[in-house]
Amino acid sequence: MRPLASLQRDAVLYASRLANTGWAPPDWLTVNLTLRCNLACVMCTTCYDSPELSLEEVRGLIDQASVWGVRVFNPLGGEAFVRKDLEDILEHAVRRRMFVTLTTNGTLVTAQRAARIARLPPEQLHINVSVDGLPATHDRVRGSGSFERMITGYRHLRTEDGRADQPRRKIVANVILHRLNLHEFEALLELLAAEGFSGVQVLNLFRNPKDPAVGGMWFQQDDLPALSALVARLAERSPLPMLTPCDDLLRIPRYYREGLTPLEAPCWAGWKELYVNADGTAIMCDGKLDFLAGAFGSVRAHTLRELWSSPAVAERRAVVKTCTTPCLQNCYLRREADSARGIGVGFLEHARRALRTRIPPKPRPFADTLVFELCDARAEAGDPRFREIVGGVGAAPGLAAAQDADAWALLRDRGLLSFDRGFMGAGVFEDLLGELRAEGLGVDRVVLAGRGDPLLHPELGRVWQACERARQAGLIGRVEVVSTLPRALPPGVERVRSPVPAPWISWDGWLARGGDPRLQAPVGDALKLGIRTVWPGLDTAR
Image (tube, rainbow, N blue to C red):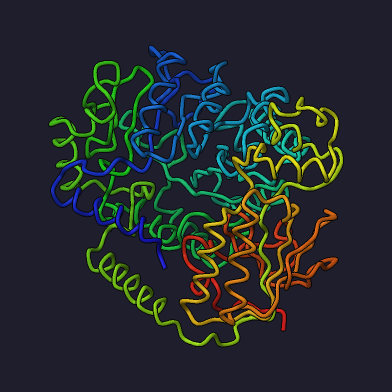
């Protein structure tokens, strides 16, 4: 079940598109930090020298977006790593609690730059690396030696995250499916899977009027049967997790046959994204896939909110609503906000759940065991996360060198630890137990375990209270804790050595099939979708 806040935002966006207004802020802010690039890709028409926003100007845009309620910052290029202050920009966005998706060709990622990026939390910074084929094909498209430099940059990111003891960061391959890599595409995905990429997004070419064949990359009619067979296989099974929806994969041959209608779903280009070019010009699609022709103001003359509500952007939105250009840009789809009926059904489901919560049914058996990972901080001497989480309080009397379990607990009890990430909020924990209660589902035992020590949780008192209420309501049978801290537990809570393999909800809400969540493929986001939604077909530990 979608969260109520998401449904409310979907409803406002639906009304905004209907009325051609900007009542809701965009989902994300995209900024071309530069249009310079160290490569010369044969299909590229967007890299050239251009005036650029200063570091302070970019920080100002991030500040405006954060206060406005925009949650995603999308820095692009050119090649973003051309800017020497890129890490300063990323750090500022993270401090403003924005989620960042960085796209790069990977060739300028040195070990030193990767080490600085490794300081940024993986759940706030995801990285997209552009790949165009196996080494020879990639180099043909992007220049000699570019594949080796790209894969070296990727490995630097993985290595430095490991040295910083970070959870595995999402690093995705952005791969254009084109004529030169058609017959090696699956082999490429196998190579990327072996390197440890988190998944693949399949992209498509824009036709270049100056070069309709796009450097030999555009599919010809003779290629289309093989293309159709490939996307059918990928939709069935991919060597690497496929982040492009199957329906969109299967549309690709029609796109190259010139048989595709525009997106075949409402385009949200003027509502989902506010796009700022390197010189500060606000741009969007002009209805013919030319973004520079869709300029509607400058961030140097107007605030983001002023641009979003200007008559000029209203004209651009009107063009988007009547667009007839065949397009596969699924980043501008927003299917959850397409249907008034679907949004209404979501609100009715929340009303039904509220009623059931007031008069909850008697819990029925659901699973023997459900494991909650409350945090990812460990109570171990020398834990590399210690200095980061303690921050500036390490010099407090008696704590200067006390990097042991008791010091962790003491800092937690004094409220001195900085829990900016890596913790399941007590409110989220309460909501997940409430989800079970509302659905009438019972669990024999709840285990608090995970990569970190649950007794370090900053809101441990609320967690205990939620467990006790659930026990009294018959929702759970008993509570067990896996911890190395020698601290007393409340009545009714047992200490155990380790949990049995069981369904596992990580601190960031993903449900794993059992055992260590780092080693298991997640099956869904329990926080956003609800436990019942992500549960069907899951084998429980019975």
